[in-house]
Image 1 (cartoon, one colour):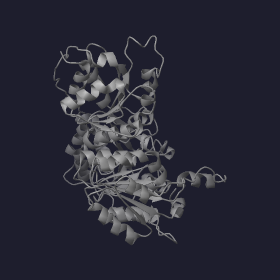
Image 2 (cartoon, rainbow, N blue to C red):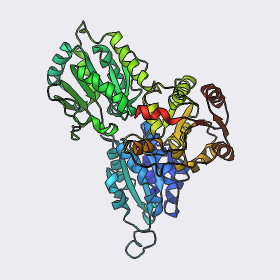
Image 3 (tube, one colour):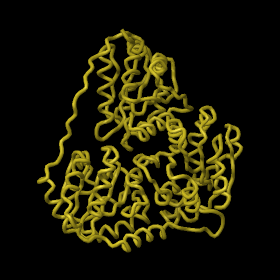
Image 4 (cartoon, one colour):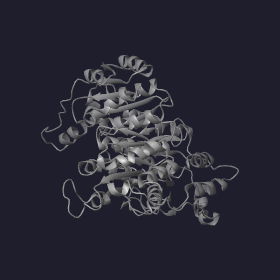
Length: 537
């Protein structure tokens, strides 16, 4: 009979898992050996937080559950930020932690904490793998992690259970039947669509979770409805599509423009639009007189916004039904000139050239110009991320990775590592502030070790700019916001890569093109003037 660790590894492999990330302890060695046997590559990282972000990013990139492996004690406590990231950013993550033998738990104390209780508030399910029915436990956990809304699941694995033999468990392949809306259920929405002259659609990550990107595109084109995407839904339809207005989420300046057009709209759709990505200004953004339709995978229990019409279920099914109702002649909609003016208003509010040096807007725009259309980009948390989301255009779903629901710093580098491991032939670009890089700087060692020729761009201003700006607006003294970061060029070279400092756009474009053709990773330190952040926050 197979060992428990082998049963777990086989179940994950059958689910499509090909990578696991983490730092081993003696408690998980049986599992690592089982991974090797079935063909799952274990990637040793420098910290469990970095490992968890890599695992979460692997789900974003492939749709297969990410796998994070940690040992007991500090191993599991170090996972909490990454696990919370997966919870709030709707990612299926399997967290497997080793634990002492069940025979020791009642008398042993070294490194012993209640591991299930620790993670239970930030996972969808936490369980200790038993000496029987492990296969069923793992399959159940995978189903919970993947189901609406996706999120993390915790498997606690005692050492004596990992190496024990047990029956493999039941195998079955259920036929899944999805409930679809009836045409008559959507009759009020069809009537509103036929009459509306200025409809708007706000789309979120739910469309990607349901695999409904193509149906969403057909829907907006059939009814000619311009749309705005949350940051994590960028690229659900290519952002150079004539009906794409841009993004919404955390920019007060851009949201002010969207809210003005929202007031003008006579019909508003929210489609898979998760408020976990939005500022608090989105609480009750319209009154009860506005005709609003919410289509989502799950019922609206958040009540951040309320809608006249609510549908919970298959987004593809709902969009199919509404596409089928398109009349032969679509009613007149927004004029092309109005949509162009809408987009230009946003870009005018963002565009900036500082009196000296290079600004973050210039850096983001230059990188988008140089890097190919199929680039996978990652971005860290900070002032630069809010700006980048409104400058960097995405042309595919889930190709601009970031921590938005949780908003964790230290995200860009680990997620870029995962992206390059999974898609070695794609250009990969990680954009970050120096503080975010400093949090996970040890993970740079993986770049040379795995021969990952990606590009890192550090928006350097030696300050926590977003926090400094808040201090200024609260009329508080500047305290605790100077980063004191190292020489990144020397650091890149020490880790086996190339390092450059740029001070203007011409230099940046030249070095970025060199980075794209390099066989080693490249770190570009852009010495930015952060003054423009004050106009965008």
